[in-house]
Image 1 (tube, rainbow, N blue to C red):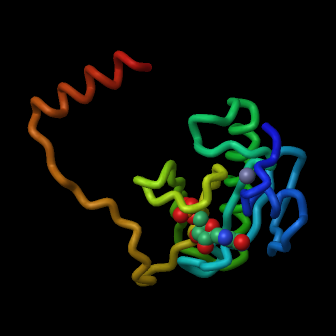
Image 2: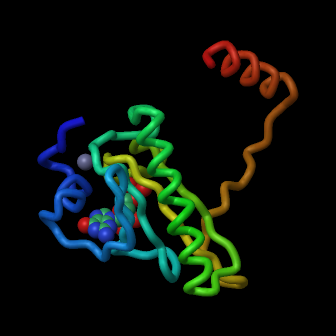
Length: 139
Ligand code: 5GP
Ligand code: ZN
């Protein structure tokens, strides 16, 4: 995928704007989030421009996820984190602000009060059955 000239993460991938780089390989790049939700909050991106998880070819996705794993392991070790969240937003409705696929690695510390909880809206058995059927039919 060609770089998108209006995309901030394409500019970071191309070295046109600076970042606090943690790791890179041929296909992926990891750097610190400029507005961290917790100590060590990192972003992992494919170097090519794909808007969402649905757009990236499987090979490049695999490489990006391998980088997520490396960075998460390093952050856990280096910062003595007790856990981490992996967050990945797709499209505006889901809170995606930068439309270049990225994974958030958010290190977590006991009692840190970071709010990432999903909450439950609840569902009736009939609704669960309907969602199961419809989604399965589309896989
Ligand atoms: P989203 O809401 O799209 O999942 O998250 C975008 C993330 O990118 C935010 O956490 C935001 O702080 C981060 N971000 C936006 N612009 C920049 C930037 O120029 N540099 C860095 N390092 N992070 C950025
Ligand atoms: Zn981009």
